[in-house]
Length: 113
Image (cartoon, rainbow, N blue to C red; front, top):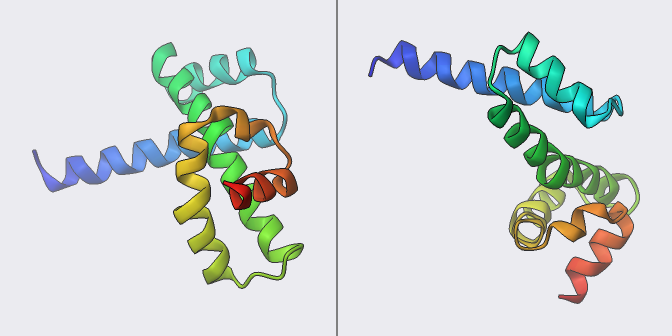
């Protein structure tokens, strides 16, 4: 595999991630997100669904928690990043129900575990 190919794959994956994030943050309905992703990103439905699930249950809750830790809890950027990666990421991966909580409740749930 050529290095150029790896760079293109990385660029493509990042594009899909950014489109998914933008549509999800804009509160576009799931079916419409999938339709737009399949058309704009030219990907199959299964890949679009995987990207949406990742955004919905992992990436968005972690971004929101990171922001909460800095703005509401007074964490510095490094400490917030460490908390999210060390505690929130595995907690969300093992229990998708946590992704439905507000950032404050997610923080409390992780600290109680």
